[in-house]
Image 1 (cartoon, rainbow, N blue to C red):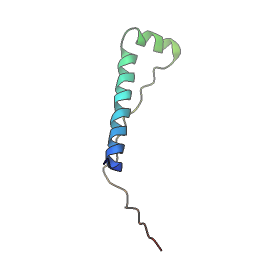
Image 2 (cartoon, helix red, strand yellow):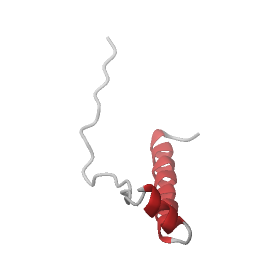
Image 3 (tube, helix red, strand yellow):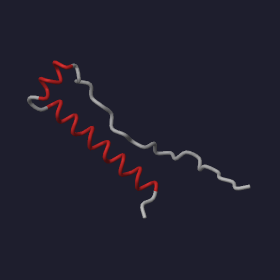
Image 4 (cartoon, rainbow, N blue to C red):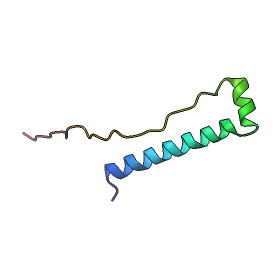
Length: 62
């Protein structure tokens, strides 16, 4: 059974892989020419989780 943390880690890895592929396409021929003409030359940031975890959520059942 996959936990929520596993799903989040997988999604983060998938996103960062897509960003890496995007950067590679921007820097490779003919992508660099096409992206320059189309204005899609902006680099994207990788997702990084903060080092400090937020406070745990308190759940109460009445």
